[in-house]
Amino acid sequence: MKRVYVNEEWCLGCHLCEYNCAFANSGMKDMATALKGKTIYPRIHIEETDNISYAVSCRHCTDPICVKSCIAGAISKVDGVVHIDKEKCVGCLTCVLVCPYGALAPGETGIMQKCELCLQNTCGEPACVKGCPNHAIVYEERGDAE
Amino acid sequence: MNSYVIIGNGVAAVGCIEGIRSVDKDGNITVISEENHAVYCRPLISYYLEHKTDLTHMNYRDEHFYENMGCEVIYGKKAVQIDSKQKQVLLDDGTALPYTSVCIATGSSPFVPPFEGLNTVEQCYSFMTLDDTLALEKAIHQDANVLIVGAGLIGLKCAEGLHGRVKSITVCDLADRVLSSILDTECAAIMQRHLEANDIQFLLGDTAVKFDKNTAFMKSGKQVSFDILVLAVGVRANTALVKDLGGEVNRGIIVNTKMETSIPDLFAAGDCTEGEDISYGQKRVLAILPNAYMQGHTAGVNMAGGNAQFDNAIPMNSIGFFGLHAMTAGSYDGEVYEEKTDCKLKRLFTKENRLIGFILIGETERAGIYTSLIREQTPLDSINFEMLRAVATTAAFSPENRRKKFGGVV
Image (cartoon, rainbow over all chains, first blue to last red; front, side, top):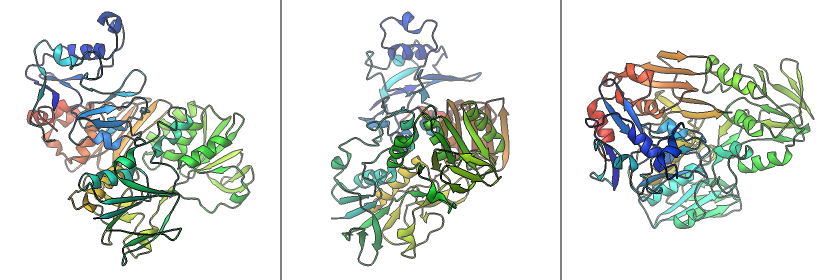
C-alpha cells in the first residue's frame, strides 16, 4: 500500500506541508480564508534541530498500537489506513501516550486527528506531497509486509 | 474443530476473539457475558455522564461484530466453575460448555470494605459498569450532594462526570493525596488544585468509617451529609475460577508472556491477571485497557495454535480532568530529571542507561516517544537523551534509527 515518506536530506524545513495539510482538511476553497490569522492544526509536523529537518505524519503501522489502545474504540484500520472516528473519540489522549512517532495530536476541538492520506477530503491525494517544493515528501509503495 | 470459550465480554475478550480469528477462521467461539450488553467502552462511563459520548457511540465494536467473527454470545450468565479434567466450563444455569481452550477475561469487581451502617444508606452506587452508571444517572439531580469514597482514577473520573449535574461533590480518601496509585505528593497536588478550582471538594487522609442513612462519620470525627454515595475504594481481580482449581494466583491470575495460566489450556487476559511489568521487573496487575486488548489478542493467537508473546507490558495512563491532562508510565525509580512551572510538570526516571518511567502534567505532546523508549528498553547512550528529555522528538534518534522509523513500512 502507498504511504507518505520523507527524505530528510531534501527537507528544507519550510513548513509548507503543515499549511497544505491544514488547508486540505479545512473543507474550504480558498487558502487565505481557511488559514490566514488562524492557529493551524495540521496532521503533519516538522521536526527540526540545528542540522536536520523532516516531516512526521502517521506511519499507518502494520500493527498499530493506537488501534489497540484506544479506550473509545474510535481508531480502526480500514484497507490499510488507520482511521479515527471523530464521533466516537472523546479526546482522552491515550493514542498520544502510545504512538512511538508522535504522529497524533488533538485538533481545534480537542478531538484527535491524524494523517489519513487525504483520501477522505477533496484533495484526494496527500496535499503535503503535492505541495512539497523540494519533493522531499513522497507518496509511494515501499515493500509491504502486509 | 476447536471449541474456544471466553469468559467475560470486555476488551480483553475482543482481543482474544480477534487473536483467534487471525489464526483459525473456523473454530467455535463462545463468549460468556455476565452483563446484558454487547462489548462497550468501560472507561467512557464518566464521559457518558458528561454528555461527551452516548450509548450508541460507546460500543467498542460495530453491531455486526460477533456475527462477523462467528461467535456465539451467552448473555446474562455467569461461569461458576471450570472442570479441567472433563474440559468443560459450567454456567450458573447448569449448562456445561466443552472446550479445547479457555480464556478467562473476568476483569475485576469493586472492593467494598465492611463499613458499619452501609446497609442504612439508600442511595449507594459503584462506578464500574454501564449499569452502575445508568443507575447513578437515574439517582442524581441538581440539588444532590454527592460523597465519593476514593480519590483514585475511578472516583475522580466519576466526580468529573457528575460535575454540573449535581449540587456538590466531595471526595474522600484515606490516602493523603489524589490519584495515589500513579502520582506522588507534588504531582497529586497540581491535579488536586485544578480539581478544586472546578468545585470538587476533598477530604484527604480521612475516610468514612461508619454510615447512618445520609451521614458519613469520618475517621477524623467530622460528619459529612450526602444524598448520594459512590463507593470507589478500589477493585479486586476476579480470580476465583483459577483459584478454585488450585492454579497460581496472587493479586491477579498469574500469566506468562503467552498468557498461559499455570493450568493447561487455560489462558487469562485483562484486569483479572498479573503479568510481567518490564519497567518494574516483576509481576503486577496492570489494569489498563491497552494491556487488556494486547493480552487478549496474545491469548487468542496462542489458543488457536499460533505463537504470540506479549513481553513488553508496562503501566501507562492518560488521564485528564477539566482540560488538564496527566500522563504517566512505567516505574518511578532511579535518577530523576525534572522540569516544572506552576501548572506543568515533567519527570523522567532513568536507571541503568534506560528510561523506566515518566510523569507529565499539562504538557503531553508526543509523549508516546517516551513511552516507546520504556517499552523497547532503548539504551539511552544510543540516542541524544539530552535533546529528548527537553522535548519529545524523534530527532534525538540516530539517522539509521530514523530511516528505519520513517523510511519504510513499520
